[in-house]
Image (tube, rainbow, N blue to C red; front, side, top):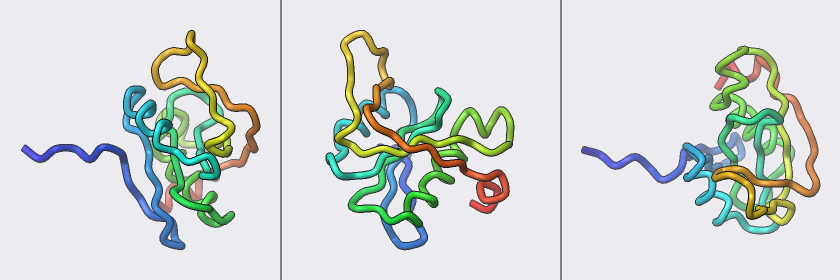
Length: 122
């Protein structure tokens, strides 16, 4: 039986490597390997993978990764509408003792919208 890859892996249109967690435990592993300057994405609502763009991302990379993040989210699965995505840096992530597995706090974030028509293309 073939072992499942550690993270979901994908590449942006510019060739940047993108990693995404598969569940709450895997999200913990993903966050642990993120560099301070790397870009991280998560839906505005609970129920998505954390998504990490490896290296320094362009706006195009962030847009592509946002679509990837949206496609694998509960927000998309449940509504098939536009999905709000939070974008932040690895340095802005923190974990408090009382936070459950796979949950993190973020100090500074931007919000972008992954459009339904664009999500359908990937």
